[in-house]
Image 1 (cartoon, rainbow, N blue to C red):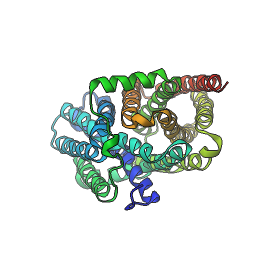
Image 2 (image 1 turned 90 degrees about the vertical axis):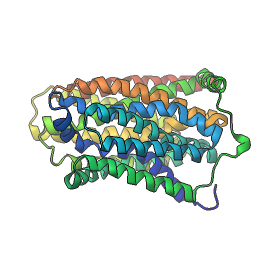
Image 3 (image 1 turned 90 degrees about the horizontal axis):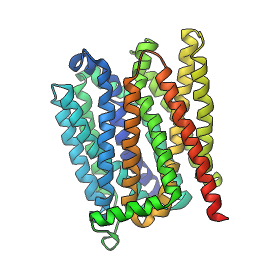
Length: 402
């Protein structure tokens, strides 16, 4: 650990790097109706692509940022990624068409992949095992708590300067983050431990990862958990607006839900060392099957508007809580046997899970028809599949230790 930065400050810095993604997605939510009315009035559902295009770009960038950080060091790759992120935010700010914004958001996602994915490799450089999981859980808590303020912050910026002001806020946030990292964190990957960036080495690392059944299963479950998160994020604003007529208060409801559900990551950090990562992920997914199945059933009944809204808010909190518990643990499970290729492993894991999750979430979001059915059914199915894969992981681990 660098002598310039304490463990607490290190966790805070990693959390801010993670929060780059949350801020880039959640602060855009209040802007979607205004952008849709201005740039896509005939097909307002297309505004949701502003979220999934960013996620797709992040998935693309994720595949390269880890290996590049293995070759050139962690900090230089983060700096270049942040520079691309800032350029793309300026391009989106100046856009006059939805298509240009979507292209800029893809570029912004590619740039955002650097702090998000390389941060995972940095944690693996300095920690391992359940202590790594604990660090990841605390950092992920910030990732899940940040939405408590991001939509309200976005709404405030929009009220002051319109939706374009959100992209200016992205530039300011990125500058603060990269300056903090540059001044306080020493390069965690010594030159003698770096791996040349060659296609053959990348392919060799991919093969090594997919020969490990636990890593394979962890990637598959992480894909489904991210699919659940992205599906909720792409549809939550239309749900509040169209179904429950709460567009004006959406940022505050969203923030309150995120604040409550974010405590799940804190709980995970407190118990993961004692209970283990796989067990907590399995329990969280099992609980989500029960809850999403219940919401799916109850919404087929003639409930009052107030009851339906209260039910949705509680369920939304449970989805975010599940994400807070599962993602950090799944990352730690997959990264544990890959410490010797941490950057490359973080890239492959993040790229595959993120791109596939975006491909799952985008069509579900476009199926929004003014009811909760596409959202609840999609999340229920993904929860069941992820739970079954975690049971298979348990069987694999038992066969290895037998």
